[in-house]
Length: 368
Ligand code: KG4
Ligand code: ZN
Image (cartoon, rainbow, N blue to C red; front, side, top):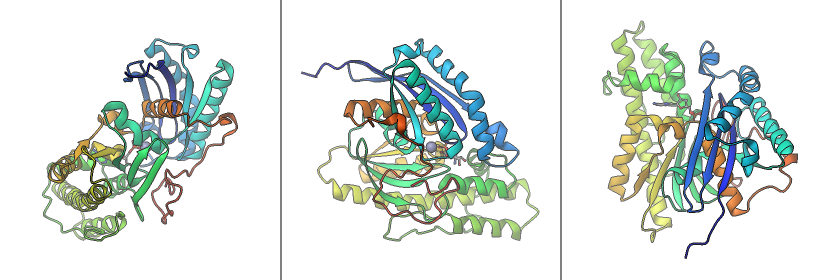
């Protein structure tokens, strides 16, 4: 018989980058998790003029918006602060100004309402989302691709991660954003590069496939970025067709190189867990919204006998439901800091503390 468990309800707060977000997530007595509210206020408009996230503007925008966003999340869920069991807030990694705003607000609310505070690693939020949306058991392989991180992680359990690969230079989302900027496409770059690529010829430019074929599992994108710049300046001024062709060729190079890297990761996963009946690859992070990448991973998993779990796009990009859910998993596992009120936010906070940090991984600092 299933053990009877109490319902758990957690308020989540996320402020590590350019989204101000709050959410209420519950796990019922039947073990099912449900998102009661998921409010995400994007700061895209505040940063668009600068072509990227400006940390000081982000921190100030979080200060202005967070209280209202939390109120909206509680209202939408039809609960008050008194009705939640705990407050989970992102304590890192990310931009320190935003982290301070989110964590300090969470501390104040926890203190005032007499609730437990759970400090959550943003990357753990991404890593566990597949267990909120799908019935995924540990262990599984995670491809985390966003503006700040590009990693293959073995997810063994709550708080137990092994980093198998990371980027040695730019993050994947960063490569999309820089390519967009170079081609004068609007910020944020990823979706606009994907849109332009749909009209373009992926074979027109022979761009490099960094690290393809290498036994080590890491990623690299800065050489590709340079090749794009050279291809573009060689034919400037660019017509709309030129831009579309460059985007299509760039995306084809990304898809090709990812297929090689992730394919190797899956082989290693199969080798390390030969008896696993249901090998799973999970994707998370903003770049997981890319249709060409999703399609490639789908084909790869089918060929490798694995199951691809791709949470809905709104839960792949930054949100607070994933932070609330990670809080629930931590509560259930008894893995919470006794002295959470004394915790300081951490700009850097790798999921796998034993993995060596590689130089320069991502514009938001070496997140892991
Ligand atoms: O996870 P996320 O919302 O924020 C963090 O960086 O943590 O990811 C944002 C990144 C940006 O670099 C954005 O350009 C990229 O994800 N992105 C995409 C697409 N949608 C968002 N990249 C490629 N194709 C997309 N459709
Ligand atoms: Zn993220």
